[in-house]
Amino acid sequence: MSEIFTTKRSYNLMLHGGGIAGVVVILILMLFARHELQATRIQNDAAQSESLALMDKRNDIHETHRDTEQRVQSTENRVSQFKTKIPTKAGEIDFLSELSELAKASQFQIRDFRPGAVVNKPLHSEMDIRFVGEGQYAGLCRFLDGLQQLPRSYRIARLSVTAPKSSEQTFSAECQLRLLFDLDPELTTSGKRK
Image (cartoon, rainbow, N blue to C red; front, top):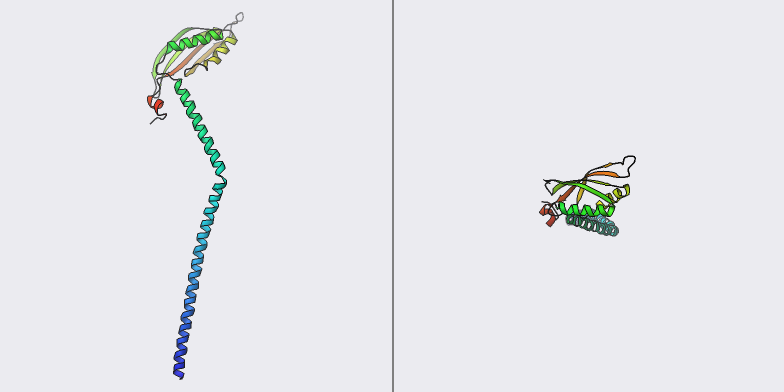
C-alpha cells in the first residue's frame, strides 16, 4: 500500500507541479500580452492626441487654406492683367499717341520722340523710347503720375530732370522708357514656363 501511496503521491506532485508550471506559463503569457496591449494603447493614445490636435487646428488650417486660395487667385488676376498690358508688337506709334494725350492732359509738352532698336529677351522683347519733355513743375508731376495709368507695360530706364534757369519756370525732362512686348507664347497660354 505504501507503494501505491507513493506512486499516487508522485503522480499528484507531478500533476500539481505541471499545474503550477502551466499557471506560471499562463501568467507569463498574460504579462507579455498585457505589455503588448499597453504599448498598443500608448500608440493609439498618441495617434488620438495627434488627431485631436489636428481637429483643434482645423479652423486654422481651413483659414490658411482660404487665405492661400485667395492669394493664388489674386496673383493669377495680377498676372492676367499684366499679360494684357504686353502687346504682341512694339506699337511705338500707338504709344506715342498715348504719351501725347497724357502730355496734353498734363499740360506738359513732349518732343524729340525717338524709338530705339528691338532687343529680344528670352521671355519677351523690348524697345527703348527716348523723348524730351518740358513744362511747369505741376505739369511734370501730373505727367509722371499719369505714366502709370497707361495701358501698356514699360519700365522707366532713365529719367533726368533739369531745374529751370533762374528767370524761367519751365522744367526739362529727358526720359527713356523701355516698352515690353511679344511675350513668350508659352507664358501667355499656360501661365507657366516649362
